[in-house]
Image 1 (cartoon, rainbow, N blue to C red):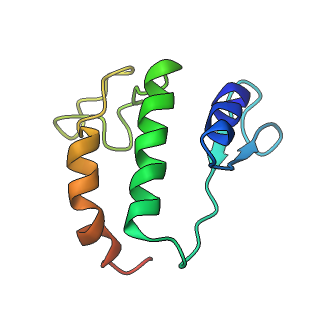
Image 2: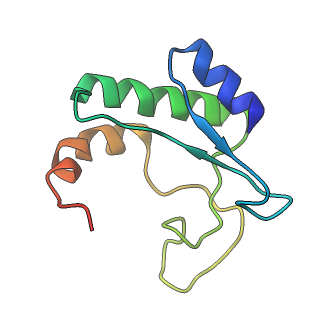
Length: 101
C-alpha cells in the first residue's frame, strides 16, 4: 500500500493508509477522503488513476466477497473484478444519485 500511496500522490491524489492495528497484521487498506466539491471529472480522474496504478501493482483482484464473484456464492480468491473502468465511469453519475446508507 505504501507504493500505491506514493504513485497516487505523484498523480495528485492523496490517500490515507490504514494498517495494523486497525487491520489484520498482514493486511492494509487505503481510504479516500472525498468532498462534495469534487466534480464528475475529478472523480473520473481518481478512478482512472486507481485503475492504472492498480494494474501496475497487480492489485486489481478480488477476494470474491465484495463483487468479484460472477455467481453469488461462487467464491474464488483472485478472480478479476467484473467491471471495466469504462463501465465504472459510465455508471458513476447514476451511482452518485443513490442515497448513502
